Image 1 (spheres, one colour):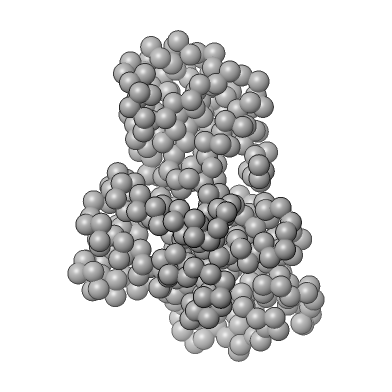
Image 2 (tube, one colour):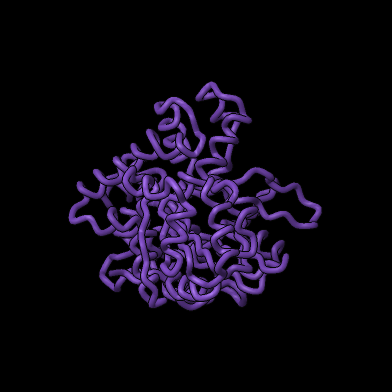
Length: 385
């Protein structure tokens, strides 16, 4: 069993809030984690899968069911399938307000799980569970290489062969295209949806151009914007926003777009082995997205992530901000001996961060100037984040 780094935080939330929501993509391990953590509160639990007809039948009269299980921790899986339950949960909590009464699991962001924020305000806490982070994996030779290639979904990363990993990823994409995304409101021809996902993969790490996506798919920009928002709310893609400052410079205003899980990205790019990855033209962009995702998963709650680019050539892959102040400027290079561009050096000067980093796959940890440090991804997460 691989211990998840959010376990401690989840135990804390369960010990204080009546409802704790674990959100994240399908098959990321939410159910396994919930069942494991609930044992720590020393309270009998009952599990209800809202995609299972037999379990849904138990909630034909939800008030009666919850009253009969008043002293148990009720785990409700795939809560976005029955958002109408939230007002009932509020009523049950107000009758008996105590910690750890409900754990709700959802494959959609809190904003997309309708009614939850309004109905359970002050009663619910959210925690996001992502695919395995590099820092969660046991020490083994080439773990970063395997993790980058396969991604962090448990069944993909732990598959006994690359072929079975690829089969799992194929079925994951098929399920989302044919069932999960339509259920979240993305009602579009499955071929268009699959093509959109593949186009995003080929744009991974680039500035988002909605006009080009719309033209290729014969869809309006507003339609593309809505589709991307739903895919982001389902934890499948990330739109990294540009950092804007008060400097008198023309800044790029469009976000960068990424496929969040590197294994799903590789499958969409038809990369099935490390040798194919090393020779692929998307290698640098893939490394950038992989590093960004691993770092964002581990960020403190009060830290926001951006990228920085100006029209005069200044650019920085990742900018970490706390209280409107840049604390870390990070350039990501797939090289053993990284070479900074003029644009990178200008960006370091513009941003004036307390700490500046260049992150590579396996570099030693050293300074290349007074305030610019080179290190590996694992060193950065373990020692500087």
